[in-house]
Image (cartoon, rainbow over all chains, first blue to last red):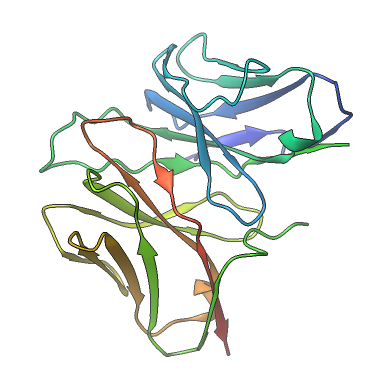
Length: 120
Length: 113
């Protein structure tokens, strides 16, 4: 079946501009995550949605970053007044809801291909 | 385009050899671990996971070992193939805690034909 998709695949913007990055999760997955990956590093958590609500936004670096998931499916990551330091690959992941029991299930997160954001 | 892992530790092996990639994790409370493979220009791809109530788990050509005493995780790839060339990340979480995964810094595996 279809995996997680992200658009655009590449985005170049000027410093100070506003950008929106879109994520289409796997159909039926209730959990959606945004991560940011800088060159040579592992992904870093930004925000997690369970359904429509942001259950954990502790990874957002500052108030220029905001994300929504109004219908519990597609999500948009919004960055205001972009800075050169925002340049990175923004990854989206989704997963089905799994109860927090130790002895069953997998907590795998399925990643999309990412959006490479370059702020000039 | 840019390549993931330009400044990462690199493990170079010959095709057909076994590879061992190591990871030291940070949180002693973590009880779930995943290995991901990431090829250039792509998102991380799940390889195998393991829970803290196990110390070894095997998949197809891969084995993950967990040593909770020293907070160490390893990924063994048998009969390494050129298609295994990628950056490998371990990730951890506490099942009853935050759902976010915490990723390690990664290792680039280069398979020489």
